[in-house]
Image (cartoon, rainbow, N blue to C red; front, side, top):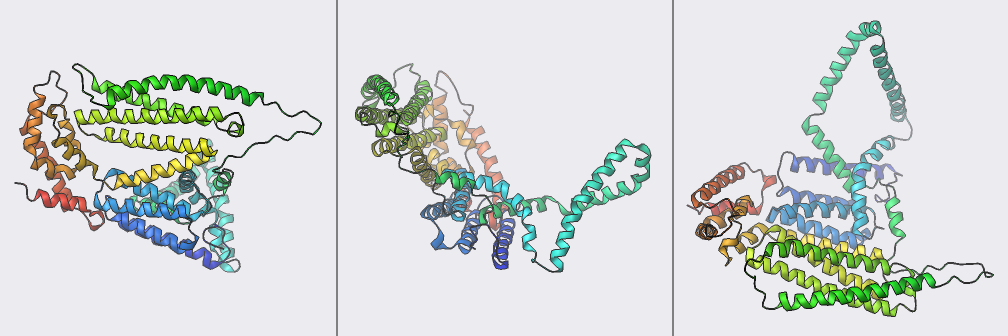
Length: 518
């Protein structure tokens, strides 16, 4: 047996996984009990990866598991370097899918690995309790004792239940048993209070997490489902008795004609839209007077992105089955390629809308999010082109695009986005359109930047005072400076109380730079 199969055939194969869970749970408790993310995240990630390698072995890992492990280690390292929200999300998400892929080598896609990791968190405790008897020797006194314990639990629980029912229905029986039962429940309550403290519950929670990461107790349901899917489409042939006439090609032909009409119409429509955007947005774009750039970007961008996504869904529906193998579908395929290319051009136009908005109003998380989402949409268009050209399946699309999203998430974790946003906005030419309120809601990492360029913040506030519509609250530099001082005091108090588990380079860098501020 291997630790990856989940079956227990020898004491060694029973106790080694159990020992790894105990070690991982102790590590989880040491690193995370009442601790904020910091050095503890990469240490725990490294510990889980090493324990997985001990259980599974490097040679048994699939390439998908190895890449996911590498991504988890990179993201966990970025928690220590940047301590950002995105790095924390990336680290734990990557570790979960990496563990699922390591435990079940037959998994190929991140989607099914994510489902496996999610389901494992809930199923593992149930399956572990059901298999406790396998930890007891097959014969001898311990085994007999365990059997008597199992036999005694259910009758005792039922006896307690019926006693309470009879107490509720018979006042005299209640009076007869009140003293003993009340003392019994008081003793149980006191015992539970002592056993199940907040720390105990935290350790149990950590044990569930570690068990779901390290051992496989999940049934093979998801693996069996995934094995039905392939990257390449398979032609579906309907076999009929030889005495019957062959099936008509009319359904495929009608679908092809409908698709041709649709793609010709939408290609013509999108050509007009793209010509307008290329002439208007691509070259020499200027914001007209009284023009709502906010509406132009916020509403227009998402509507166009929805149109691209809808176009992708339509093409996936048209080329979902035997239309891919129909000999008369060459023209439909050419029109699909044209539509994909035009949607790619539309995607560039959407990117330029967001670019013009950033160049006018500065950076913000939502604007970065639009760029990231749009990049994934464009990757989706490229993979859709490959799907239509090479007769690939929808599973291929989902698998490749999930890995693209995974790579983007890990890449995002490597950047200190708070500092990037503040640096960009402080140096922005359009001072009266920068959201100065947003400076105060950013993380503590930007405090040295704001103190160093407080004069630029004041200049931006002065420009806001000349706007016809004032949409920011902070227009007094003295009030702003006092709010910064409050954030600084809170940070310095938090930094002094940091344990070694919570230590990170971002806080150290911030403390060092703030020490140089008057």
